[in-house]
Length: 87
Image (cartoon, rainbow, N blue to C red):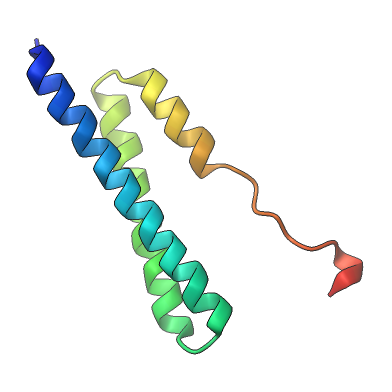
């Protein structure tokens, strides 16, 4: 059974990884918006999703269902797109 100290370290670890993945996603958004490096944007999006999926899997494996649900809610937040008539 994990000790409170181990549990705290693991929590910080997954939160740091989530923060890094979200920062990478933000970089991808910025690259995409500039439209100067579409391959770089795609690579950043792909890596961000890979990291977030890894964290979700790890949380679920360790029985951290509340944290996994919390992260899933953040990741599944709907992307706001303009209405079709504004294209």
